[in-house]
Amino acid sequence: MKFERPVLAVLAAILFACVAGAQESSPQQARTFVNFVSASDSVVAPGHSAPVQFTFHVVEPYHVNSSQPLAPELIPTQLHFSLPGEIAVGKMQYPAGKLMSFPFDPSTKLSVYSGDFVVRGLLMAPATASKGTYTIHAELKYQACDNNSCYPPKKLDVTFNVKVGTRSASRKSR
Image 1: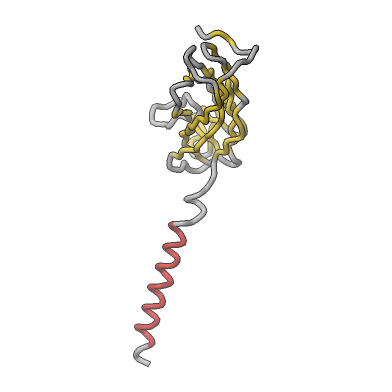
Image 2: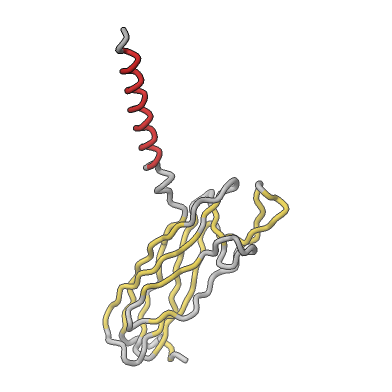
């Protein structure tokens, strides 16, 4: 059976290609490390500002660097916005990271977020803002790690609505 070897070689090559293709589209590529839980309902009057908060959840057993990592080579967690002209975002306030050490270097502490964390900010509408509801797009940039290794940086899409209208609880912007 001389033709069996070439057939087996071809079958082995096909099997190898299938396994390699399956690994490229494996769940690791689509692994979820952080989930967007919610954004607070926000109504801001033209010429005023209103607080907003975003809640995220880091999936166990992972952690992400805080917004203020302790080493310059570590990638900070940051929220970036794409805004319509009727809305501006004031300085974001990130929570303090929790100082933790990990098995790969027990003598070094890292500033990380795990579990739930909340990012706060201030939404502002210029006095000329048109009333209505605006969809805001943002992305959370982060790098997730577990106790043994870190994964390539990722971006998490965040979408929320802001209503420009009247609200007695809104504050005058400064």
